[in-house]
Image (tube, rainbow, N blue to C red; front, side, top):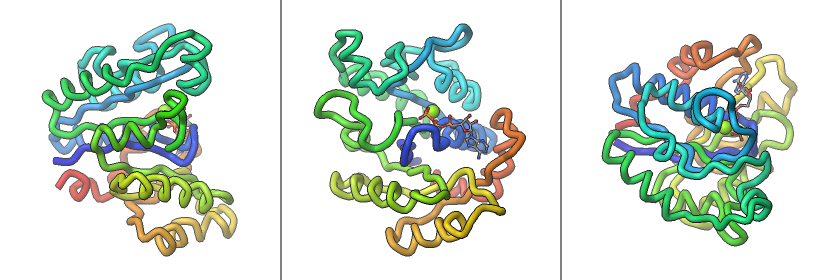
Length: 230
Ligand SMILES: Nc1ncnc2c1ncn2[C@@H]1O[C@H](COP(=O)(O)OP(=O)(O)OP(=O)(O)O)[C@@H](O)[C@H]1O
Ligand SMILES: [Mg+2]
């Protein structure tokens, strides 16, 4: 079975929401799925793991892996990893990510790895999310917005992957509003037409979204989960 690195065209586009829902859906199908957020930054949470994303991912996948494994690097500042490392006077140590990823790979059949920010978010001065995806040897799934501006962001993300020979399993368009404007209506088909990358699914903007329970039926309906794990 394949593992995936989930990236996005920007921060806040839905990486955690979709990665955790995919994990819950695969878990429901009986797949031994693991999750990882190699690097997180932000405010330390009062309960659960330091990173809110990590708590959501682990809860959804129903895993009991240690925080060190699932989130080897946490930097307690709401900025990019590179800026956080500079401010905290820390050196980015990517070795720890590969060590923990290997442990998780040995425990799970499918790994879903959530990135941070977008494809060129700097982890250090000269090492970006794209470099991490390549070095982890994973295929990527790109989460995009449907709103105006997304063609530009999506194509830049796709091109960055192609430049580094990162395989793109597909694109998921998130937060789609049926009543949105013409740009939104065209986005999925135009992205496919120009990039040739399969659209794995279009997920609606869920107005009363509280947690992934409300997202599970949409993922089950709109995404061919079996093809992801075949
Ligand atoms: N389809 C959706 N419908 C409604 N709300 C959504 C949807 N997808 C995501 N959200 C909400 O949008 C916000 C951002 O989503 P999410 O945290 O998944 O993004 P992210 O890409 O993981 O962000 P980050 O870069 O901070 O890790 C969250 O509050 C989430 O609940
Ligand atoms: Mg997230």
